[in-house]
Amino acid sequence: MDLGSQIRKQREDKKWSQQVLADKLHISRQSISKWEQNTALPSFTNIVNMSELFGISLDEFIKSDTQLVEQIDAKMKMSKMLKAIIISALITFIMFIGLKISSIDVYNISSYFTDLSAVF
Image (cartoon, rainbow, N blue to C red; front, side, top):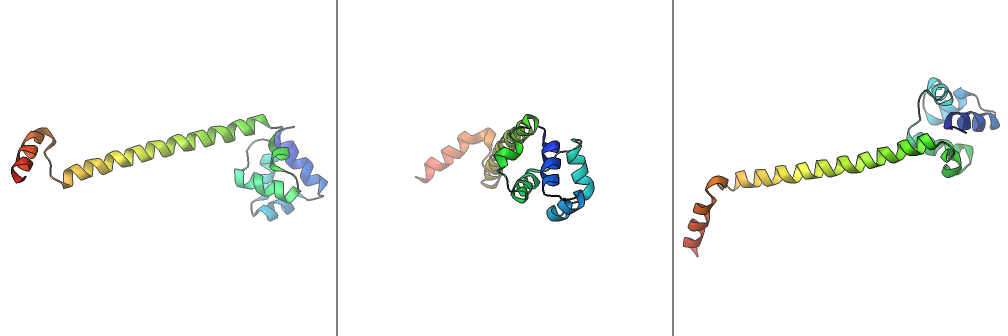
């Protein structure tokens, strides 16, 4: 059973209208309609909230929808990769700024070490 059908089934079991569920999730009724028709997917936060409202485990709620599970996995992988890229860029930027602040001429670094040895 896909997620849209699962949402509809659980909502109807509770005898809730789309508007009632939407009010409980603080979203529009149109969002519920799109989810049930499988034209849009709810956010992970809304999926967790619905599983709590329906009184079923998250696993039971989504495990039959393999497309959703794959999409969540892909988003998590992308998030990890994006964090790694941002951290790498930040480290590179900080190193570059550090070199500029210390006014070391990267192209003439041997003179820096010669001057440094004269001090010691």
